[in-house]
Length: 295
Image 1 (tube, rainbow, N blue to C red):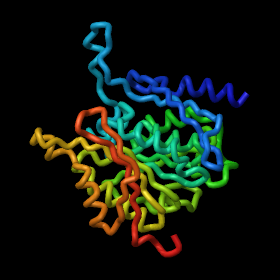
Image 2 (image 1 turned 120 degrees about the vertical axis):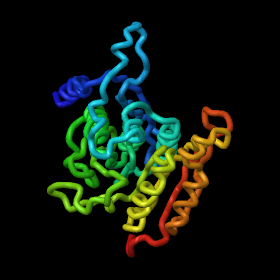
Image 3 (image 1 turned 90 degrees about the vertical axis):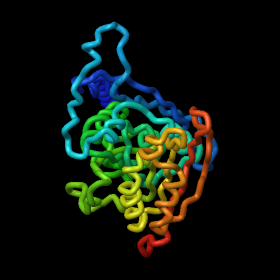
């Protein structure tokens, strides 16, 4: 009965959201405790805002007012969180599936966007807190947790507050804006804080240069506070041929230097070619030598 109700809720999750939407289906295979592949496969439905032109020739339907445009913390960079799964996020999802990272641990995703990485990590057995600015968190992330959930995760050891069961793990959401101070008490009726995460994950969060310092400040603060590591997927979008692009977009080397300037160690775990010629996606492991005692 609960499963049937969850299925109905999932169909309704995006109803009345104020804009057209589309759904991407993602399948991830869980790994056994010994690291070998198991037969347990989880299918996720990732809903997102549809920004593709329609085919019916009615131009008026392509014009809409973004209902979250005036929300605090919502800007052009944040609006990308509604619209697609980025190439770097797909690479990080594949890495999570390949390694089984975070299974049984608390994971915090920074800049979760539509939430593919965090939801895949949860399905594979982690307890994931997906974070972003309020508009993204309370709309697209909330809806995607709802449409993939199978019930409350109140009895799961290690689950974040207000978590929902997703596959073999759980997922919850919380607002975290890198432009602001990290909240010291983000949850009502819980002593847990963001620093109680074991691992941070993030994908394509530093493509704009203006986001680099706020992101590094937030993540390095959490690492110094006791979080073990950040697994970061970076897809270089800078261009030496386009001067305006070069000024706007952060180069991968800048990301590394910015983290190293805070005392963090940066290790490249995986590299792969981008779909764009001459570009690559790099997955980094970032740790802080100044972690809190006993972390």
